[in-house]
Image (cartoon, rainbow, N blue to C red; front, side, top):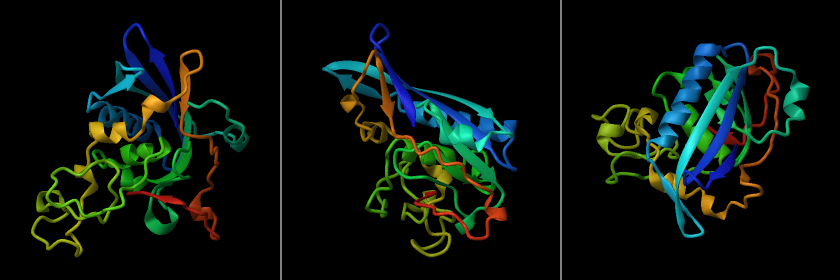
Length: 228
């Protein structure tokens, strides 16, 4: 989720998102890693959107903070569209990271998924802006996989976990580290449809879910949007 601002002087549409992390595995280093990955990958395409026929550069401005003592009431009552809340733990039910739907501002990250270059944070950020996994998970013959393709996608051998394996078996599917954000991904956000009020618009919706530690909740939690 984020707040879009329209700078008519600089001809820039800026999406501001603030990532707030909490949980036993969260710290300043991991939080900065998540922030940097999201901002770097989503700005790589240098995308442009037409607003009333005028081209605007699309810029993602991502900030972040580690909040180890965050109060659940703060999450539940948040009304700032820039805030996105992610719990980070070593253990997650289903062994996956996830967010709380398409166009949301909360989720749960498994620490193991957040290594340098994993693309997990950038992928999940795409979900918070409203993007789903593509319906066709066979990307063979199309080169570098786009950011919203999930784990299990069929890709050309150089982009597999193991390029020597036949497609579809263990090792023969997409390694997420090869995903990239393309201008086509940003076009799918349909930013030209945003309704600006005093130069501002909301991208996504409030979910404001405070997640408990899965290691302490044996009954589990519903995970509607899995990590890809």
